Image 1 (spheres, rainbow, N blue to C red):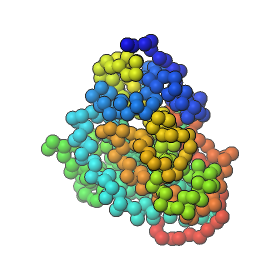
Image 2: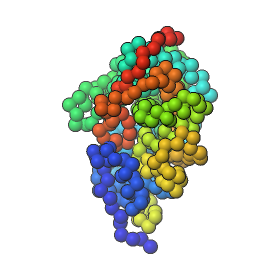
Image 3: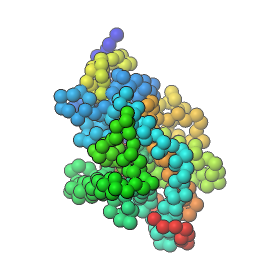
Image 4: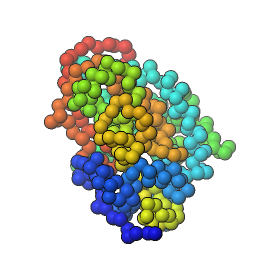
Amino acid sequence: VTSERATVDFDHYSKEFATAPRETWDSMMSKCPVAWSDHHGGFWVISDYDGVSTVSRDVETYASRNDQDPESIYRGVAIPNGSVRFVPVETDPPEFYGYRRLLTPFFSPGSVERRKPRIQEIADALIDQVIESGQIDLVEDFAGVLPAILTLELLGIPISEWQKYARPMHAFIYTPSDAPERDQVVQEFLGITTALVDVIEQRKKEREDDFVSFLIDAKIDGQLLGDEMILGICMVVVGGGVDTTTAATSQALNYLSQNPIARQRLIDEPELMASANEEFLRFFTPVQTIGRTASRDVELKGQHISRGDRVMIAWAGANQDESEFPRPHDLQLDRSPNRHSAFGLGIHRCIGSSLARTQMSIMIRTVLDRLPDYVVDTEAARPYTSIGQINGWISIPAAFTPGKQLNTGSI
Ligand code: HEM
């Protein structure tokens, strides 16, 4: 039996949502976990664990593909739809499997393990730059920088000019489209594309041990990928991996400053790091939402979803659903079980999850080791003014007792 359409006045880009995301999800989940919003051309919002789990696993009904064709119903995973097609995120089976299989070895736990010493080296070099001053911006000097440098290196972009790329990678996400500095930020971000095109050309002449060289020789069904696809995949690694990891780490470091008991516990019981990481991911859910398109008419929790309707999966809603997470608004460093959806669920589940977890643990651990008494200036700290998809911080200034440089390596 289909009841009347449940509607909700929800805009993920609004100031109201950025100010109170938790309250918004609680209210939607309790009143109408499947509800229609008229914003951005109209879309369904699925906000409880059960609904999110159903939709993300039923890839035949809820499609990810982005045809980039105004005639097609398939408009990818961004609501409103984006101008670039991200691969493999915006593909469906069977095409999807070829790309996913190709990329998996590069992001395997073993391959991430081999990068650990380098991640630690970058973390320590960044802290060395500020440790004698007693002042740090946890985002701009640290959590916003390490994932960017690591990603540039992974791709093979020479990082001697890392400042040129690191900040724009972060600023591209948080600078609103109507901000005066938007054009500048976009230009700098596009500089990454230009640098990548150069790298692709160079690696074609001479291979190196990097992701671009790997993609140049990679084949799917006997076919080489082609320049456009190589660039597209690299941009997914930039777009999917950098600001998410920055947001997750910034949220955790900010929380630990404001909760000294939790911080001390993590210092005293380092073995808690793994479960604490999962709880930070659940509690803050850096990627709050993602989109799909209904490929057929379907009933979900008494609501009629029509073929062609846009559907938003609220990972963040699912992650605070009481039926899956007892006392969801308590951050419990040792929460178990913790089957959170911060990395997504189903076949598109984040391919970079090992790399993200490793970067997060190393960054958090390094701050706790080297600046154990850091205190965030909560008045000066600035969260994203609009969440959209990513929930993070622009700037988190903090003070601490100055220490000594380690000089164990350089960026
Ligand atoms: C804390 C950090 C991260 C979070 C919260 C996160 C979150 C997510 C989520 C929710 C999805 C699912 C998308 C969907 O269902 O449509 C996803 C997919 C993906 N992520 Fe991540 N991610 C993180 C870090 C990374 C990193 C470090 C990389 C790569 C270097 C990466 C690359 C990707 C890619 C390529 C996909 C698409 C996978 C596919 O379609 O099969 N992510 N991520």
